[in-house]
Length: 303
Image (cartoon, rainbow, N blue to C red; front, side, top):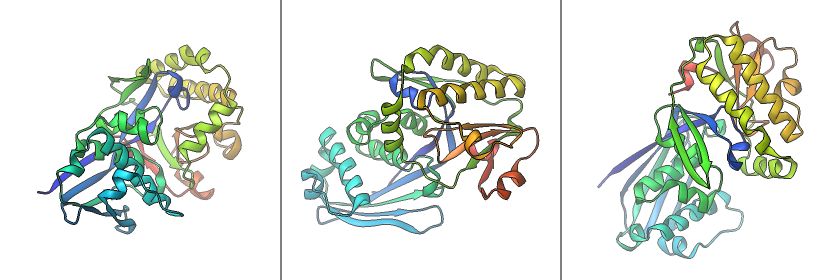
């Protein structure tokens, strides 16, 4: 029997890093994501193949069930070890997929280039959780860690406010389609950021993040209800200032685009992946001149 599962990619608009400590964050699922196709196999093993957006294979291997149950890792095989770790934690949550199967043939397909950082790992974890019928947030916590906002985006087909309340994920559906959305762009910074490293850096540098939570919530409400781009821009810039202070780091605009006339906000881990750009004029020429070729409109990116 062939089964297909799909999960949305993600963008974190507000609350980056602070969401780990309980701030409420605005997050948007993307039109891009990843599927996982499961077919019956044999030999008590999983034959796994992962395809990138361009159709190239970025990971391929065969993993015996015994490797999953024992959580056996291999030297200098980080991709394989990551997958084994996820599947082992899934096995602990529901061993039936190993106990009652002869094997599997699994393929995954990204609809965005892997290096974009839109959720290669979170979409995989959510797809595996759907397949094995386990809680995706628990699987994330036991494998990668993190706030779980990306898992929520994988599951919801609309904008959300996401918050950890006593360590438990809380999701509120919201409407988010600014009347000036044609002025919003997403620019890839040509650098995939490691979420794990960025989080570690946050905890090393952070001050008392909780004191900023009320301000972040005010920013959320401004972004959700702004009727004009001026107030929207001010809220984004205020958020950048708050996070710059928390991280003791210059904003991405200060570092890379000080001569840009519009607003630029980091999304997720600072220093890589995508930034949100709010500009009265189409900024494509500006960013391409600086070597940033991937520029998507709000309509192209957001689900």
